[in-house]
Image (cartoon, rainbow, N blue to C red; front, side, top):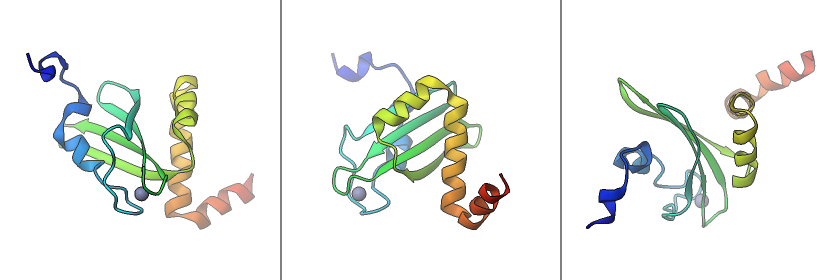
Length: 119
Ligand SMILES: [Zn+2]
């Protein structure tokens, strides 16, 4: 019996998922097989954490299944795997907020500073 016979069909076994998370966006090194970890699973959304073995950069990726197919949003993070796990256990909404902040920082840093200054 092949080991794949025992594996339930889930997102992490889809070739598309591994294709998205194949290479480090920073140094373009290929991720090691055990670099990717599913941190949080919901029905059609997975939160995945990957650490590059070459440059040690961490990336968080949302992978969503929709009727359009797989979508992914990845961003570099300072959070290591344990941080992310802690957050995921605590409250997924915290994690959402965190990702939003990181997203903002990455894409619109001036907007982020604006928001902070308004507090
Ligand atoms: Zn790298």
